[in-house]
Image 1 (cartoon, rainbow, N blue to C red):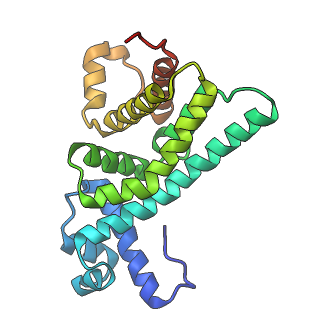
Image 2 (cartoon, rainbow, N blue to C red):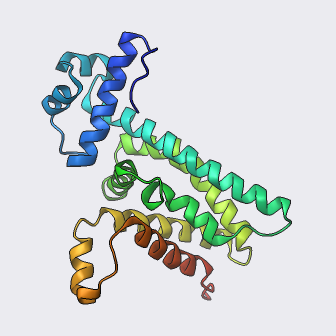
Image 3 (spheres, rainbow, N blue to C red):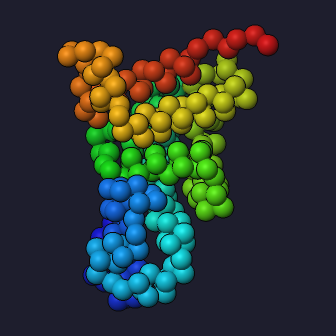
Length: 223
């Protein structure tokens, strides 16, 4: 998000650092951006990073907090429209529509490198949670997750709440692992041969939605 010209110079510098961090994290991974590369890209000095954020971890938290808040707000807005429309029509919300709202920041028509960066953050939290990722997930993801679980329970009331919460977690895992697999295209080519499915985002979105909807709708096994 480019810094608006109307911001005070101090805020403009802060936003320039965040914008550069977003770009470089997306290009090189969360842990692959030296401070010098960041300051060069942002056109600031190292002191500016420490002045505005205090540490590189605090910078990462600010970057992912802003990114998570923005993309998750889009998801919640789409979800609210789905549930409101279903309520107005006196019907259950469509499972496929709920899932598409969830995966949109990652592979939908408006998806960008930011969506894949968001997936990297979630995967990092799953594999090696830290106080920073705990704070970001607790503040920006847990409230959204509860909304999605509630909507899925409206759509599939036969699924117990505890089971649906687990299926939501499996949905998240499916999405973030799929998008974080950098060797996916080559692996798909080896498995399917020359007629492998396209790797474009539209194809990826359709495959993810179909797979996840099938899992969410699956009968619940006995104890």
